[in-house]
Amino acid sequence: EADIYQTPRYLVIGTGKKITLECSQTMGHDKMYWYQQDPGMELHLIHYSYGVNSTEKGDLSSESTVSRIRTEHFPLTLESARPSHTSQYLCASSELGLAGVTDTQYFGPGTRLTVL
Amino acid sequence: SQKIEQNSEALNIQEGKTATLTCNYTNYSPAYLQWYRQDPGRGPVFLLLIRENEKEKRKERLKVTFDTTLKQSLFHITASQPADSATYLCALAPTGGFKTIFGAGTRLFVKA
Image 1 (tube, each protein chain N blue to C red):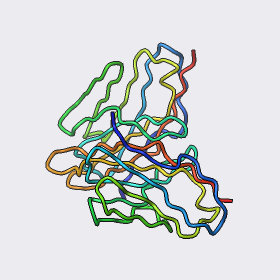
Image 2: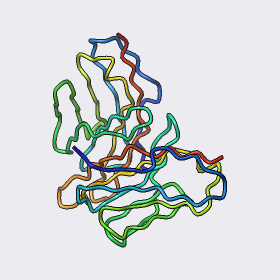
Image 3: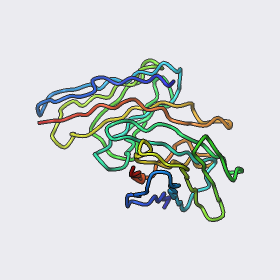
Image 4: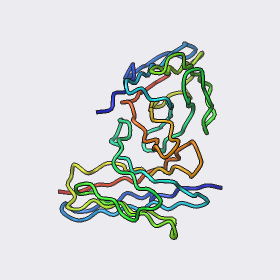
């Protein structure tokens, strides 16, 4: 069973607030990801990391930032939330995907963010 | 540009029938292809992986085929059940690449 956790599961917050979405995994995976997904729509990669102190921007431009100080932890921060940030945020982790090892991704349950 | 196409229209089938979902891709040389299941409001869950040198993979009622000449993968669910209703995503890992690309998914409805 894959162990990847996200908190909070649901968050309703006012415009201008700073928020941090937490993501932790216990599988020792080097690679971690953040996706944004609106209902019925496709996944959009917004950030990923190859390991500690590595962060990369994904395909979808995002005003959020991430950090990777520990292997198991990959938090996402919005300095000033806006209604346009309302969405579901999914965290995932995988092996690096090198030397024939696949990068099957294990997803957390998601955080549903609503910015009023 | 690289592209993954899954049927955007929902697939409606009767319980007990075989559901077949399609994933087409262009401008990729995939090392392997994966299928995931996603339920509403939840994260995707990995189902099956098939490598470029494999033609077919099975797991219980699931079967995946991979045709690198046609640039297509088919995902079959035999003896479908209402509990199989979900969105199914295909995902490609390009050869030599470091980033898996997800398709938009196909919604499957199985009627009792």
